[in-house]
Amino acid sequence: MILSIVAYGDPVLKKKCKDIPKDYPKLDELINNMWDTMYNAYGVGLAAPQVGLPVRMFMIDPAPFADDEEMDEEEVTQLKNLRKTFINPQIVEEEGEEWAFNEGCLSIPDVREDVFRKPKITIEYMDENFEPKRETYDGLAARVIQHEYDHIEGILFTDKLSSLKKRLIKGKLSNIAKGKIHADYKMRFPLMKKGR
Image 1 (cartoon, helix red, strand yellow):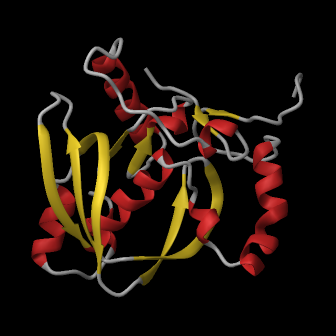
Image 2 (tube, rainbow, N blue to C red; image 1 turned 135 degrees about the horizontal axis):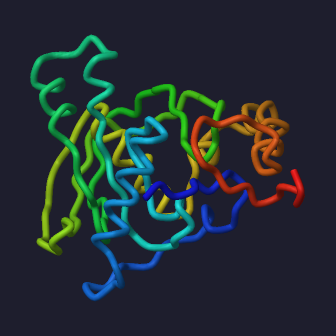
């Protein structure tokens, strides 16, 4: 089932999320619905708060990036085979010199800005079967994971912009919160006037 994606301005996007217990109700159904929602919106990642749930889970499938970039075969293979669900993740290490990449977000349609992030991360998490994992990622894979991880920490990519950039996009963000935007997928707008 395709869920509504929560738009910028909803308080759930600013909450530090809580861990998911093993007996979380209908977890498999939620995971399937989130995959459907992400693919329907042509996303490469989706975090639980983006569907209105303040819990520590996100999924990624950065395969579309494998076609866009000039990268070596190893990175292309990694991106094409990285469809994963991360439950209760913790980034335990970030390494390297920060680099910029133009990011967007399904909760903030039509806004894209350069964001600086470290190129290499190590993350511990549970998979959908609650098997513990510890893995290291770099490049675009690390970036997608960091972007989704920020969501469960209550951080949006726009929070990482300079104060000048934030001022420049303030009007756009306000319009998104009010629903004065067109998205090609189902959204829920926190400040939308009833009857629109």
